[in-house]
Image (cartoon, rainbow, N blue to C red; front, top):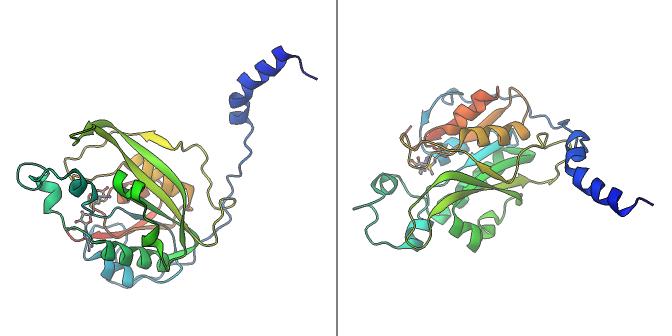
Length: 251
Ligand SMILES: C[S@@+](CC[C@H](N)C(=O)[O-])C[C@H]1O[C@@H](n2cnc3c(N)ncnc32)[C@H](O)[C@@H]1O
């Protein structure tokens, strides 16, 4: 039996020991099939087209990872300032908004095109996070398997509170499993990364998205984003030696 002193010592050292002794396999056994694309879809470019049309052109059961950052009004409507698009948030309001029905069509398209056990990283604001997005997943093989909070390191837009976080839901297509699929084990579930929103009012963090896509794909695999905004996922994919295929209404 260890003495109390040894027990306390063991408890203190445990995180350090856990770091050196990795219990998780970094071996990814999942492989994506060879990719054949229609001529109109050129990888590693900023395609200007409708995301639903884009998704309908993709082969089924092919891509290991997708991102979706819908253009929704949830937080703007809840905060109900009444001057949205006039005095404030002009750039945000000018972007094409997606209805829930449209977001569900995007999710169905992504579900169809992901490989079994493939991942979707879905950005949501705090209202959708709290009120729930499960109805959006009806009739898909997608389930929520994790959540990563992005701490933007800056704050903005809040009458009651100053908001400085956004949320990335981790969804996986059936069968839901992590072993042999998720190979990076250093991503914490709160990540701070500053991002310039000069190019796009909703630009997401390139490094965080890079870590996430690297966790669930192999080098050379193709990552999709059908509503890519500033194409932050293109940058993230290139940083990690992945191919990118994506579009935005505004190119
Ligand atoms: C929240 S932003 C994406 C920001 C992006 N994740 C980034 O890091 O820059 C959503 C984007 O969806 C685009 N969008 C809206 N409806 C679309 C559609 N039907 N097809 C493609 N893009 C669409 C908007 O133009 C907007 O740029």
